Length: 197
Length: 182
Image 1 (cartoon, rainbow over the protein chains, first blue to last red):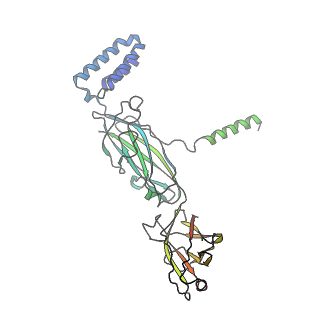
Image 2: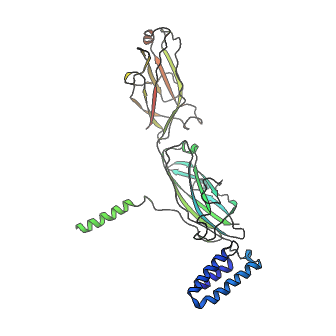
Image 3: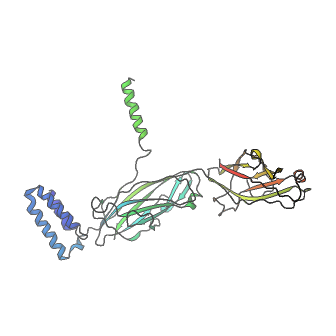
């Protein structure tokens, strides 16, 4: 069963070199199950033929996945005259022929606005996105509007192999918002929707 | 409750107290034709005030027969729920007295404060003592938006004190104002 699972993966993922790695995994698993080794080798050979045959692009599943999201805590923002910035790296996987995806963010303010609330008070924040990990700035998102043309470098749907993270989510509370907000504890949530391209 | 059970319960309480205040609310996306994740965001804004728009005060060739007064509009901003603040003034005289000096020669002055701008009189301040219960109308930390000022600072020298000053002599001093949120 293990060998079959890996050989199946070898058929559908090869566009960005994933097929080679998973084929090797298939071989290792098959080695542990000697009776399936022949089948695994045949599957890998078949994958190689498909690779050279140029039909790999059509095998993309057009599926995406976003993982490694973490809550964002600004904590107590002591200096209201400076923008407060928090960023996190996350895993964005896109199994499309171009590895492309789009991202749409929606906040909890009216109409999906990026707003934190404290009782009746509110405080706006900005959301930025970068298709590279470890970034502290990116392209500013508009609520409910997809940011298109993004590309993922993920080779595994949860980034367990290859790059550990492939995108950056950056949240910014501008000093103008901080200095006009009433003192208090603010909270909200942000929903991110990823689609394939 | 026996001791052993008590200790077990206390241990559980201690463990609970050491846990984070709230568990992660982040949700991860699953593999699909779309994938959705969400995060919780939290921020805390502490009480803050800001005093700006201050100008130096200069009384020049003052007629001793006429009390001297200088009123200026300043910006006091407070982000508390009531927009409240207090103000404390300290002079450069002995014991923070409101005093101008030229060597050993001194002359006292008085300080008044109003919680609204455009005022020529206000509540007299006592050096080092907070005037409480004030409220700001400022909507911006430096009054760069909304009203351009939100309070009045008035400095006065009485006619009697002017008459004690030596002519053609410059008296100087410093007035420090501390604003705190309420």
